[in-house]
Length: 87
Image 1 (spheres, rainbow, N blue to C red):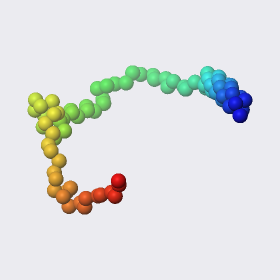
Image 2 (cartoon, rainbow, N blue to C red):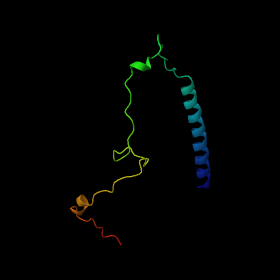
Image 3 (tube, rainbow, N blue to C red):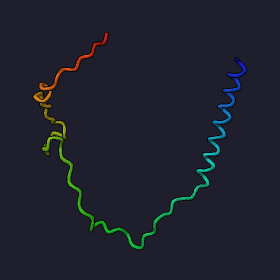
Image 4 (cartoon, rainbow, N blue to C red):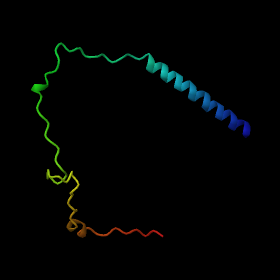
């Protein structure tokens, strides 16, 4: 049984190295992506401006986005309590 275990370990090691080398070779010899050629540079003035980032609750004060409102407990009270019969 020990011989089978040793042979299996060597088999996995040899196949792993062989698979790595074959994959690396396939990746190295694959076709490279075609880079698009641009006749003129992109005009950034024609792009629309992005909206500014607001805090989570919509305020833009000096809180730095850390003044979050607490979640409402009304929707939780209507749900049944899930209990498990674990030990």
